[in-house]
Image (cartoon, rainbow, N blue to C red; front, side, top):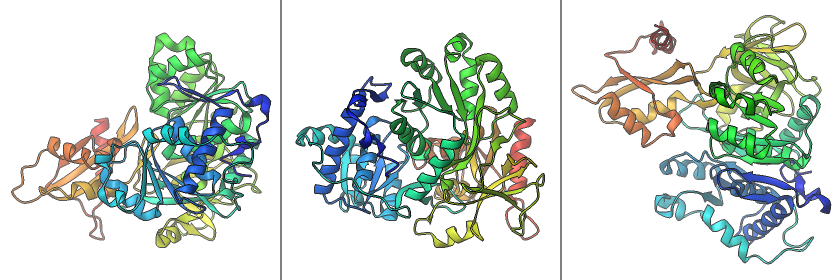
Length: 505
């Protein structure tokens, strides 16, 4: 079974049911229409030379188009690679070179697409999709390319994540990873039906929407409402207009929704709310329960573990960081490691580690990075936490230097590399600064070149030309020198503590 294209088992009575709705445009596609579009595009891709094991890079905002491209690639056995739609044109070449993508589908106008891509890769713009599909002959049952039969160990997706090096890392996920993910959710998730109405405003490129919500919609014959990005009033309006029953977000999303006091009655129409990707304070959980009247469920996982592995669904929150009960070890193992990579007993804090069929195949073209995060089959997450005696997982913080902005992971080294490219900058250290709404934001400590007069505003504007918006430092502080630890290295912990002290002062 292909876990991305289960709609092809739909019988005739279900095909006119709405599958996806683009909230901003009002466009709706039924299961029947979705099947037709996917098959037509799959046929076109094969004629253009996209074949099994080719990579299709998807640089699109959340949309029905993005889903169709993804599913058409999966239909013919190609690898789907979602690239953040906010990625700057200058950075696209990196992803194309890394993946060897045969095709790029992008929202960018042609003049913004780097020449190196135009000269080596088939490029389609999202405006081209409708024209392409309109020219395809209507495919009868069994017509066009045959649906690919995936092996469990075949890589079917590549998602990029910030890491401990300057370059983003491509996470290789297999059909077996996705299969085990759904074995976990089938056992621990709240049941849904064809009457359920889900909404997705988290970017498909970050995994949850495309790995979980799209296939969940197809498997259950439900309907998924799609927003290009989160906006609290648009979410509330969609709940009212479309009868949304299930909502998914990060802590800052729920904090913003709760501030819209006049819309609390609409929020009470929801049947289920789920939060992940960033630390959820117990105060937010309790306020949501009191005001909306339903639990604010929570979970834990990473793109390296094919999204969620632990779910707190329908269970009472035991405090900040409580993300749920660990699944049966036959599905996935959760352990806590000390600094010597030894398993710790219940109650002791260490690094959360995961072992089992949900864990990625590795990082694309980065064997050393892959080896660094695995020990005895355990994937070291970089998160701190502990297990209770009754096997509930509590996340208490981060070990790695990653900055977590409302669930979006930002590598400080990517920010530093860009700022260090400015002629007025000698050296940069980027750290997490606490933020009441987003959890963390980027703060940059900068040492100027001798005689340079570059300002904070100039550096922020410079960063915005090279980085995705959430990677751009919110503040820049200039320093004469950096604090050093006893090994003579820059002491990031002291800089992080300084940023925290400034926030709480």
